Image: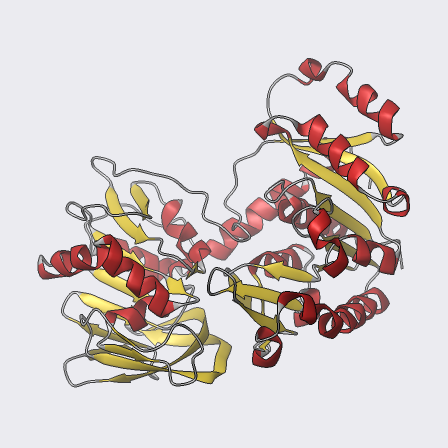
Length: 464
């Protein structure tokens, strides 16, 4: 196979995931059998593979870009933060509660052999592997426990490209400083610098790239322009908005440990619809609906809603007849009670009491893709949850197989990804008074943008 390509960043959010996605499609378009890889990801935006494994959303998207089936070995370790100093560790697609209980520095000896085997198997099965690093390789405090950056590069003798976000400013200092923080053997692995998210006149860069090469011996191989796209974010919601007149305004409660926020992207990109992230106390008057996303720590999220005053606001909105929809953890916190007998999260807690359901958290985690029947239409989605929910007599089933219930204007479902289905999105918005027409299945929008960003690779001047 070809020498693996690896994208590392000077900082988080420099564009590593984006570039790996673009590279995978660029190479696939050239007929290369390519696979993505990230040894360890930290994100509460997760996806479920066809065989029921849980991996980072970014690696799932990269596999689609490569036109291959997403697999657990493409992201053998996924860390899902559930508290300030705690994360659930997903190993080869399954929650490993024993490793999750270990201190951070004691996990590495258990995880590194798994990373080695996953990477080796991909290299045997594909012509090219495109690897994404994590954070920055210049984080000196993390070097001894590294299983995602230079240790991976040395393991497979990858050609490393270091990317900086030039839109933030200080890109040349970031590149030079990161390079200088590396040992000589790691510096030797870097084959080129990349300036990402560039906008403006390239002539304004002057001789800065020559200046950088004189000090490092490394050329800047690509100038990637800033582009707007609908591809999902790896681990955060960067969307900001305020309510707009004449729009359908949706309040999205972004509480601590909110998960899978990318599933609201189809709503964000609909014309005439404004999704407003609510991170602190705000009045919910005037919104057409309230959305409660999933959570990696539902009880902690629920406690935050109470402490901030948002819980009372949700109650008042529901009493005024504003539709409220909870997804997964959002469903659980709408119920009467959450019981945590195995201490998987933050203990037992009373819910908001807006749905006549109760949830018990159990060690066995449900992760699977699903087709569900909704109002006579078959929808695509997926499940990721520890909760088992029992319904009371006051609710009505809205999604069969214990996957969704409604009570007056309040609903909760366990199925992620419903808004990616055009028919569901259309009907949800239409009942709120939206007069628009969805452009079609969200997967088609994502596919078109993958193809579009792939064209940035040759356009950037990068010959790969």
